[in-house]
Length: 123
Ligand code: FES
Image 1 (cartoon, rainbow, N blue to C red):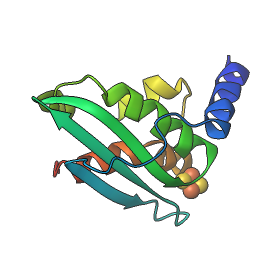
Image 2: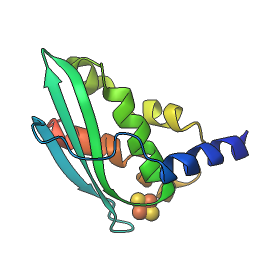
Image 3: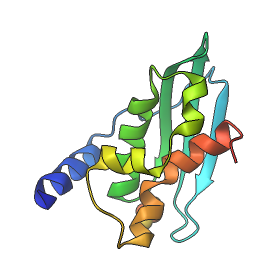
């Protein structure tokens, strides 16, 4: 099981989804992982209260890139109001790996969530 998840993460690292910028995004934020100095920027475009598109840019380890790919995909189609309730469990479910004993990797995985919260001014 662990091996399958790792392959899936490496595949997303090599071929990230939703990688790029959205010129007319209403929401955008860059977030740094203070542990390693890597950073990602998230772009969120909303139409009629629904996330029409979400993309990310930046570099980082396989976990951060896979997490950003999956998380931006997860956001598309969601209602803007729903995003406030999204927490780290949602992100970890998408990644399908247990990072509970690995706080450093946890930070990598949660970069896109932190970026979304910053972009939307959620504290
Ligand atoms: Fe930098 Fe994971 S090691 S984002």
